[in-house]
Image (cartoon, rainbow, N blue to C red; front, side, top):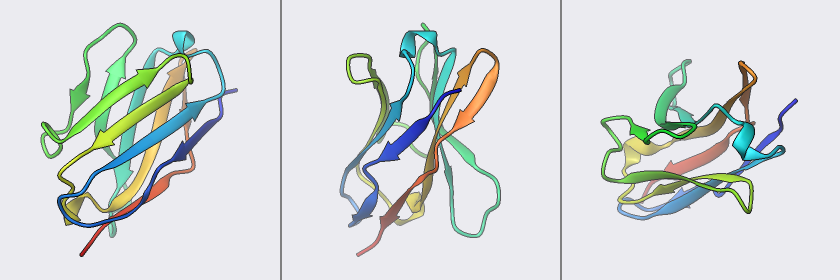
Length: 116
């Protein structure tokens, strides 16, 4: 069993920055895949924002390339999402996702609102 706890969401003005963190309850070297997804208002499905396979290169949605960066901190057991130049269309609930022993785990989500 893996527990994921997201933090760092909030209200930010357009053009601003936020850093989301996902604290993982197990050793991150065991994870096969790590990603951030979001669910925007009015949509039922979550969309991929950024992801990284163990030992691989980061992958980003076209809408966030050049603005968002996914990273990991093995000493803190966190998966981070640095978001810059935020736009109103980035408003969403952001979820952390990992694959461990072929099972998907999700966090509870953290709200990001971009508004003036």
